[in-house]
Length: 158
Image 1 (cartoon, helix red, strand yellow):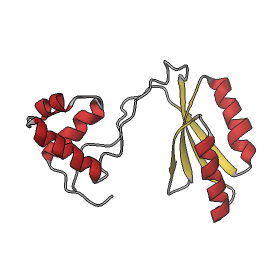
Image 2 (cartoon, helix red, strand yellow; image 1 turned 90 degrees about the vertical axis):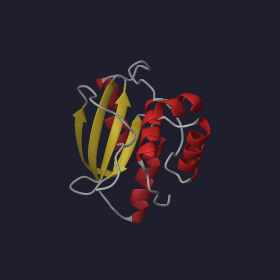
Image 3 (cartoon, helix red, strand yellow; image 1 turned 180 degrees about the vertical axis):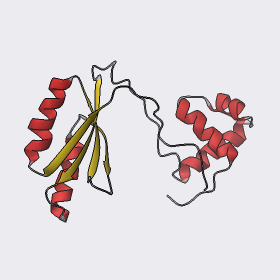
């Protein structure tokens, strides 16, 4: 994605789309006070420049029976290219992993895990994550409640 200057209208459009990705162009245009054609041109520009990477359904994990969320910080035993590639490939295949991030600092990765219950988490941790042999250290925090969740903040600039 190339850098793109986002003005206040772009940010308002992005904010509305994050709140409701299924909003019609006519409704979106009305909410941001633009004509439908001008709004559509802006959305298409944001899509073509990669600012809008896609549209997806936001799932309610609790309604799906996945009511326990955890954040797992971990360090790998080895950091060579092959070990990191194996680990990242493994992460892609684990359905319990909601999101994964490579980090700086004292942990190598932060995994957001969504599971049914503590027993499911325990099985994932012991039988899947630690069973790879790739992990040297792991630290888990369980989510008590979600306060805020957005894909990206709607601010730009310093």
